[in-house]
Length: 247
Image 1 (cartoon, rainbow, N blue to C red):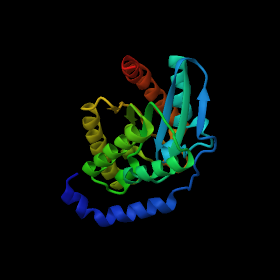
Image 2: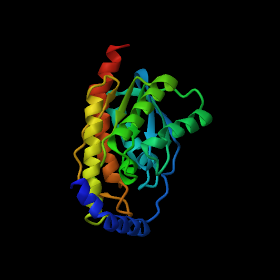
Image 3: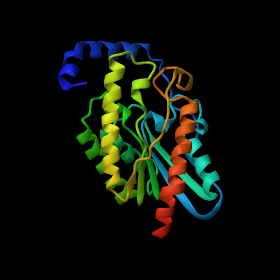
Image 4: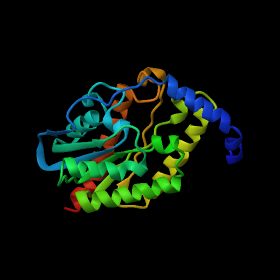
């Protein structure tokens, strides 16, 4: 869809967005501790999850059933390594607000260190119509902050979901946000491909109503399971060997 077409559809898109917000069922962030540990062999791996409602587990009742729970369990099974993790997440944030999230982390858990960060951001960038170049600048600033203050050696930026499949959104709004999400995701993939300290794994997923949360917007447990397993495999197969080689 061209920019002119997007502008022409502006009143329709705005009305659909407002209607979708009214229809959406408010969902809380998942319950459960935002830090944890799994015993294992070898040098411990420290993980820091940073992100929006997906990192906070909105769509399921407990973090064990969310992305964080599935990733840590799968990574532990794949590697047998000792894992420690912490979650810094808040629903509704865009990349622009991620640094303030780390400010909160610094206040609540000063001295937090991690070798690896997993960042779940982007849907709200699309919703707020943040241009890809600005979203990339925000990711760059976030990566630099994670490296400088938290000792992070590698950041995994998870891909955006196929927003053109969100059940809550009607067309043409669904088509427009889907196009914008694909555009942003492609920009992040190109940016990460040129870096040694960042990666952007691909995840093949389909978002039908049966796998989404009750609001038709947030992931359900099946989506978190697929994504957690895919990113755990990416970390085990591609990221950890690289970090271990540099020790």
